[in-house]
Image 1 (cartoon, rainbow, N blue to C red):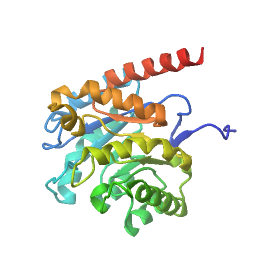
Image 2: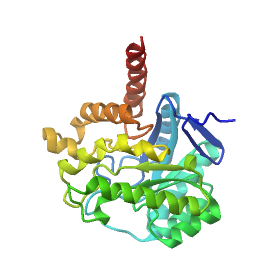
Image 3: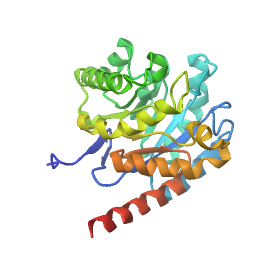
Image 4: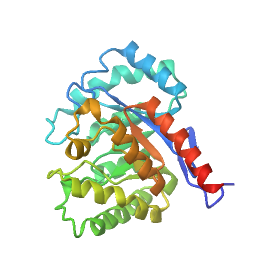
Length: 283
């Protein structure tokens, strides 16, 4: 029996106890236009080798993405999005039959195809805001990541925390009504998702991580290489790693437990350092 004071992230064929230590959730963008690594993963064998290496560094979950969600992204058809993902998915499942896979998609038919293909986790930047998606959740019972997408709201700094509070309360309730348990639901404050792209909003969302613990669900840290670092330090994409790691450590201290990243090896080092830090504080 699970200790009621523990926090688990559970789904089909996986159960991660994240009470004390975060886990690594690796991003595999299969798009030519992603903000950080667009066009990098262009060879199936290269991706398979990358997964094997990142598993050795402790990555537990691998997320496939067939469409960029960067600000003002160019939308594509559902068929094109799925065609980017499917060949990689089949090869990954063949080589790593026990792997835990997620898909980053807000497209109804792509989500359905992913679930039919055995993907265990759906990461929807729109927070499962349609009945079609909720019906798919009810039918397939996947685990989910539901994100607060500031582009879907009239964000105001004075009311942003209240808006996020209402969003997560309502979204978790809808997902539970569709048959999920809290340990199947990961919540993400959506740092970096704003049409106005303001640093002020991103800092509010990072601080809100502490308040998100009230929902007793796993909390995602998804700030890897985000552009708020550019606004702080005028850093291009090759210079954002150290600030990213420091902010991830801050959000981990506030309660974040699933770190969604491009840089797995460095994140493993962050987690080891975080554990040492915790031990020193407890001495």
